[in-house]
Length: 168
Image (tube, rainbow, N blue to C red):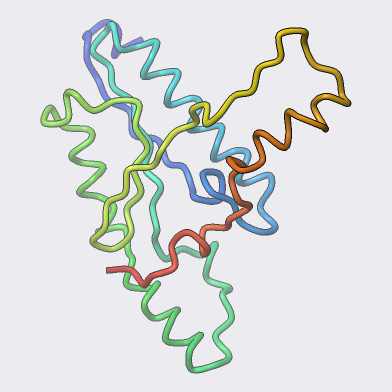
């Protein structure tokens, strides 16, 4: 209401790669975090006429939630020490920018911040289509539809499969 009345404003929502990409054992968390992306996008669409912006940030930072990562081996200990360097002070500049007037043309986007890296995440768009003039049956989908689409399927990646390099 306040943003509509003043005809300007900016939202920064927080999401997670658990929802954007996927991770094991986090179905409810992933669903909630991907829901935030939908909320943010809807606000960007609905409130744009009032000069209100809405974006998402997916922060990579050391938190209590990931504080249970095993540290039994030297390699695990070294990895956790690197992760601990990813503090909120690395996330704050992107948030401050998105909330500022300097970002007046940035809305409806999803950013990731990991140490000194900023990522722009892609959003859901059609990748490929198939058509059958006479319509589809379960059998023709199995015989023709899915085989035609299969080459464009998204892999079942987890965050660690996508971000395979150490934070910079």
